[in-house]
Length: 175
Image 1 (cartoon, helix red, strand yellow):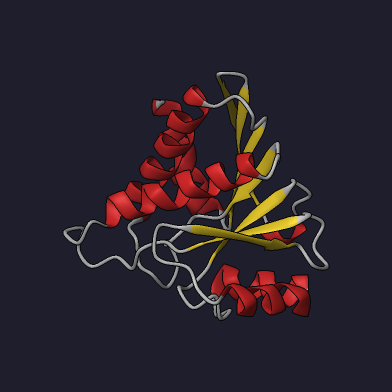
Image 2 (cartoon, rainbow, N blue to C red):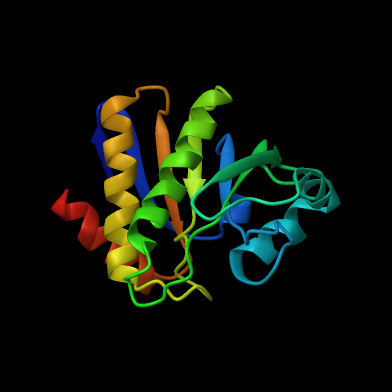
């Protein structure tokens, strides 16, 4: 499923983000950039040790912020590591932090001259963010960004399974 906003294609696919060939893929990282479970572990395994070596040099990343490393052995040239919030009931600024994770990833892509980026469903795994709310915030953040910035030509949301894809698709239809 896809839609165009201000000349930027926003696309939803069901798949494996480690197989994406966009300029950058986004990693749902932890604040220590230490690798981990879920998409974070998959990206580090597929990308090889060069990604972790750069993460160690960077040292960490606050929630809602983003940093960039090589893509290592991945098809994507870069990995943008962003830290989404752990969901604690929605009263701890989680929505602002999740939106910030998407926006700061996009800003970093533009700063580095990138034209295409692939996102996972940030914070929807072990961080427990409710998928309907996360899908709304993810798409809203990306659409708001491209209404102000024309540099990114493709934003792809690579969703792990059909259930998450269907929820994102419902949200994209509302935009």
